[in-house]
Length: 346
Image (cartoon, rainbow, N blue to C red; front, side, top):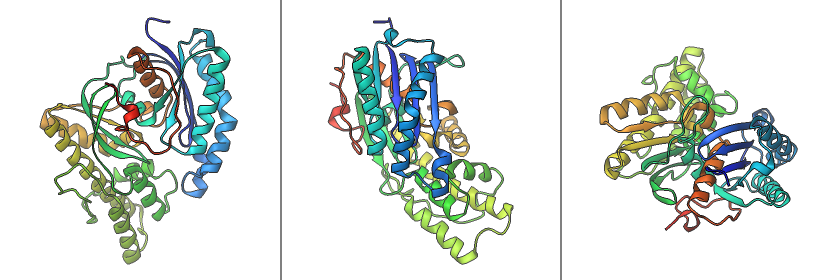
C-alpha cells in the first residue's frame, strides 16, 4: 500500500457522472460529466434519463480520471463508490461498475455515504491549495436534496442537530426559478440576478427563523413567491426580477446563516464548514464570512470546483476510512442519514 491510500472513486448519485483519483485528501484527478443539458427542458432531474446517461458515460469518465492522474489500476490501493443516498437507478450504475472493476483488478471496494463525502470536500487539496485534515466542526450541508446541520466530532462521529422539514434549500431555488421561468438549475441564475437587486424590495417569510432549534423549512417561501406572482404577475423588467431574486435569496441565506451561527455557538466547536452544491452561492458565502468575522469562528468553504457532486470527496472519505481500519463493504441505500448506525465509528 502507498504511504497514503491511493483511491479511485466513483460518484453517480444524481445527475453527475464523476470519477477521481486521490492520495488521501490530495486530488490527483477529478472528472465530472454533467447532465444539465439533458434535464433542463424538464425543469428537474428525470431519474430514468439520469440512469441511462450514467451508463453511457461512466466507462469514459473513469478512463479519463485514471489518464489525468497518470495512474494504472495496479497502482491503486482501493476503489470507492457512493452507496447512497440518491436516486436508486443512478446509484446502481456506479455501484455495479465499481464492483466489477474491483473484482477485475482485485482491489478492496468501499461504499461511501454521499454526505460524508461532502464533509471531506472542505479538506481536499490539489495544485492550488493544500489538503487539510478533518477537524471537529459544525457542518452546514446544503444542496438540492439536503439541508442539515451536523456536529462533526471526528471521522464516523456525526450528530444530526437539525434538518429541513420539507424542501431543501437548493430544491427551493430550483422551484422558485421554475415559477419565474428562469430554467434549470435555478440556483446559479437566481444568485447572479440577486447581485443586481434590492434584498429588501419584496417582503418574504423566513421559515422557522425565530424558533429556538436547528430545523429549516422552505416550502412556505416557495409558496410566497407563487402568491407574489399571482398577485403582481411576473416581474415586468430585469430590475424587478433582480429585486425578487435578491429578496428570495436573502430569505434563504438569512435562515441558513442564523441557524448555523446558533449551532456553532452552542456546540462550542468554533468552526463552521459549509458544503454541498449551495455552498457555491455567492450570497451565502458572503453572509457566512461576515458572520464568522462578527462571531469569531473559523469558516471553511470548499473551492467552487468541489462544492457540487464530485468523486474526489468520495475518495477522500474512503481513504480516511481505510486509514481508520474500516472493513471494505458496499450497501446501497437511498435515504439513510449521516447519523445512521452504519456511518458511525466507535
